[in-house]
Length: 236
Image 1 (spheres, rainbow, N blue to C red):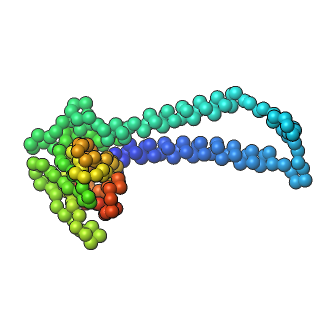
Image 2 (cartoon, rainbow, N blue to C red; image 1 turned 90 degrees about the vertical axis):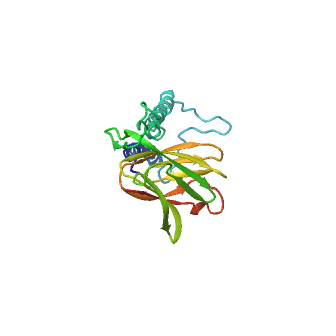
Image 3 (tube, rainbow, N blue to C red; image 1 turned 180 degrees about the vertical axis):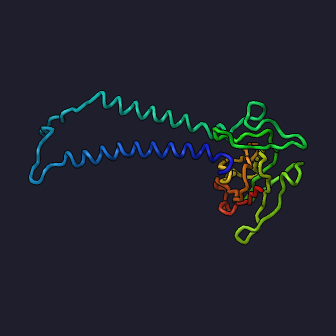
């Protein structure tokens, strides 16, 4: 995921760390109680003084209940907060307040790079179009020069598939739609996915930070040949 890998990697590491920490507490508590409170052979102690027709003894512990509720709530809030980082990058606004500036004018280059915080920064971006239909993708480089964006076909598993060739170091904003049913552009090489709806326009940032080649997939079931709705993305 060249475009947003540092952001996702950081979140992945945090989630794994907290999963191990919470799992150690939960399973450690479980195994401790399972063995510590196990009755000895030949013994059958009535620790709770259970009696027929009498409600069992109440072991209410307000401090434990509050702790068990408040701490996980704080953890969930924290994980939600750090999860906004890649969403902020994927949904970056255009213009001076965005990470990729405004549309490149003729002769301008994006010159993108990954900053110290893991965000992709660009001087400007290029527009291109993606249209989904049963069951293939159609690319449109608009009026971009061929050294920045070009379309064609590539052989994938013995079949001709659409190919989009982009230039390393350039950032693209894809204007997307569908002409029939709902599809979803999934770019694993960019770490991004976005639905495309018939009759609607959606947008997707495609930061071509480094040389890479991958298959663009459809991540929304769209009919019989959904699994074969692929295209080749080549960044060089």
